[in-house]
Length: 155
Image (cartoon, rainbow, N blue to C red; front, side):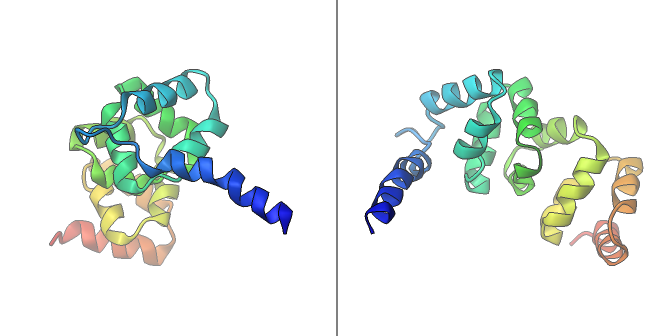
């Protein structure tokens, strides 16, 4: 029982770190940005996965918008498969394109498979036809057909 209490106590600082990344003005806290920026500069994937990996997609979107472009790209690269691609639906189109344009199509294809159809289409529709085709060709047949239909006939 005592060990269980220690685990609960140890988990609380981690939970509190994620509790609020925003200042009173609604912007991402500069201290959190500095912390994430330092972890990116140090290529500290453990810290990034711990402090950024569990953010809600809207929080991650806000963080991406607050970071410098090179930091955004590095964050996505460092998080790798732990990056929540649904956060790209929460950012400005220019930021989404900047991130996606710097990723290999194989990584986008892998990420698209984990998204719901609406989010996948939202990301794919901004890409040129050649990239869309290459990404879709890497998906299972039924997923590829479903996404192709959604891309061909947007709502």
